[in-house]
Image (tube, one colour):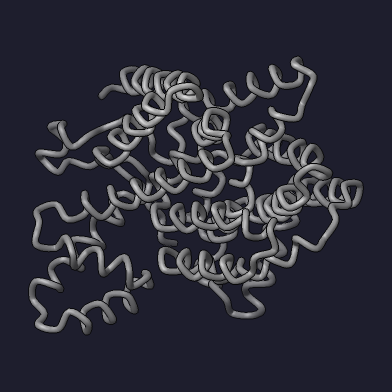
Length: 371
């Protein structure tokens, strides 16, 4: 598709899905149809996502090893250790390695899992329409196309939030162990369970967010990270490289200001009715503002910032002033348009397995800086 065709395609698809979800509040079949359309668009995509080519190469390399090695378990261990990828990812490659274009099945399955888990969470909360609106607007969906493994892990964490609210530590741990099978980073955020006992202190939270934003404007946090990583030898060769600037893709200038204001707004609104959401959003804000320019930390912030798929529908439910709701929705739509025009996370142009590009294995040009 051309850029213009892709632009129109996304608008028609997303508008149709949201319309079906809106009608689906009275007819579940229509809601299921809307989600099915989203699933088909996602699993049949080709070369959508900045990391698509990397995943394609890793999967095909692993596939060749499986085909040439007698021991499946030895190959699983070697591949997971070499690529630093979870064994379940390699296991899926092994399952599909006898098929042509193995990467399509693996990447498609991750997208399917992400959408189904998010759908389950939103349906349980009765927040399908507005929750999916946030998935499109922020744009969480496009990020899931790029960060396929971690997106599933984050979706499971969002599902586990209900256990944080209930104080059900056992089932929360089960969910986080499952999430860690899709991305090891889930283990790092498991202790966040303790926030259920913390009462949001909004004035203090807002002050911290303001300080973090000022530090970002003066480039203080990037210098601090550089000093920190160099002093402890952690990711010193990688932490602040130009390759990390992918984290700035939709979080620079007005973009980061909008995200800060939006998440802060939800944080304040949720403080009394949904304190767990408020605390999680605060954690996400701190990491987001601290991370700008560093992809590793930026991705960790998604665990908390994506709670907005639950927080925004809750805001819509409790907010009585229609003007505030209208302004919020319009601003989110503007933010979505800005990201779509900019091709955030490699979402433009849209391409599918039914295109000539797929038949010829022709990928878009990507620029990498390994300095």
